[in-house]
Amino acid sequence: MPAKTDSFVQTEMLSPTPKGIGRAAALLRAGQLVAFPTETVYGLGADARNGEAVAAIYATKGRPSFNPLIAHVDSIEAAQNLVQWSDQAERMAAAFWPGPLTLVLPLRDGHGISPLVTAGLDTLAVRVPAKACARDLLAAVGGPVAAPSANPSGRISPTSAAHVAAGLGGRISAILDDGPCGVGVESTILGLTGPSGRPPVLLRPGGLASEDIEAVLGQPLVHRNAADPLTAPGQMLSHYAPHAPLRLNATTFQAGELSLGFGPGDFDLNLSASGDLLEAATNLFGHLHRLDALAKPIAVAPVPDQGLGAAINDRLRRAAAPR
Ligand code: TXA
Ligand code: MG
Image 1 (cartoon, rainbow, N blue to C red):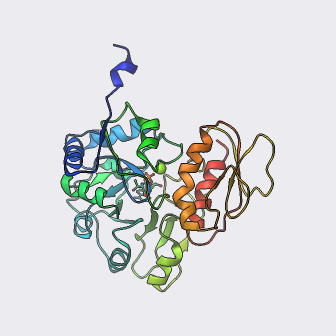
Image 2 (image 1 turned 90 degrees about the vertical axis):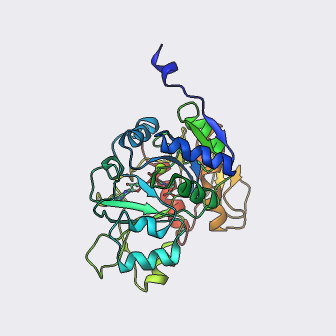
Image 3 (image 1 turned 120 degrees about the horizontal axis):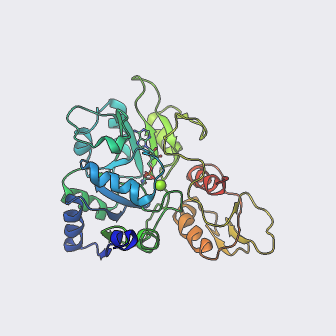
């Protein structure tokens, strides 16, 4: 049989009912790949303790190298079984979990996580997602689920089951469909691996605004530049890319270009006509998918850089970066 036919699998579409969630959990426990919704984006899940299953994530996404993955768990207690907990971790988890925040902490003995998840690092990125369907799934699996965003590597992240099916359908066992994602951009990643008393490091801006974290911490985060090699290692410059070129901070639009607006005005699509950053984050990847389908250059209006705007601009810069 030709390799292509060989690798085709019938992707099951599962609904967020106890039956659908039970089926998704059984597939994950059996080492299969299942895409599932979180409040940020859809994740491509595999049992984080099963090296072969985790390897299949990299192969299926076409992820160019073994960039570390986030382990998803259903509770703070489950996270504490995997990583060395700290006062800072406790404050962050108490304030923001479940939610769009990932904490990077040193692994603890007996964690059981496949080294493919951490790409051999001695730290682990861990998060408790807020979406009830995701936590029900994690509880049913009864262990950590490694999950990057459920898109082919380098492409636009999926915020609906249809996005996942378009990118990975026929290549993964199932998609658990619980509608569109509310937050719309990936989790904020915070590094808590420095000496105690040091402020956490913002490794990736995301769905939780850094200002909100700083308000709880009572001190500023250390911000890392995207080009810094010590930033989240998977943060490749070109990422989230539509097929056609994308131009940023456009205040005028050329003939033949598709316009993506922010705030009042006449655009092909608008992230938020009222200038609401939360609405813009929710719409970001879905609008990019829709414009991408038209296969024309895209020009994006300026988006303010505070609050969730930092994550939106980070994703837009990567989508526009030279490939
Ligand atoms: O919202 C999200 O975070 C989504 C959903 C599915 O949970 N997941 C997601 O995963 O965005 P992914 O694989 O696209 O991004 C994971 C990021 C990468 O930039 C990776 O380098 C970083 O987390 N990361 C993972 N483990 C790390 C570690 N031990 N130290 C530093 N960065 C780490
Ligand atoms: Mg991703």
